[in-house]
Length: 112
Image 1 (cartoon, rainbow, N blue to C red):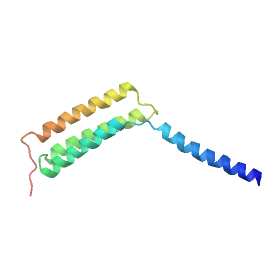
Image 2 (cartoon, one colour):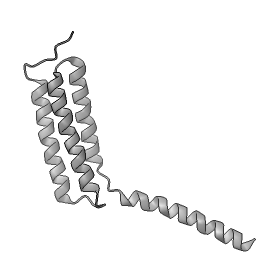
Image 3 (cartoon, rainbow, N blue to C red):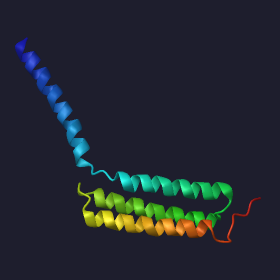
Image 4 (cartoon, rainbow, N blue to C red):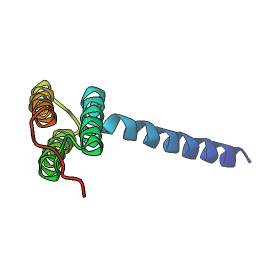
């Protein structure tokens, strides 16, 4: 009975430590993620309101995909360096400016 209890406790500890390790292994980028969500919401709102044409929306969506790919690349080694964070922030700054320009230009979606 004592061996069984020790074995069960060991298994429980191993399972708990795997979960803790998994959380540490993936670097977190909450500001990047939040800004990505905000920018996606701006694009979606522009499409819904007709302020963005299909072409503009496709371009902006492609830009967001490039940012997500850069974020995945930065996280791949388990560490997001300050330089990688700055690069992601620069990419998001440019994307934000592009969204702003597309929303406020004269091009609109043609509704049928």
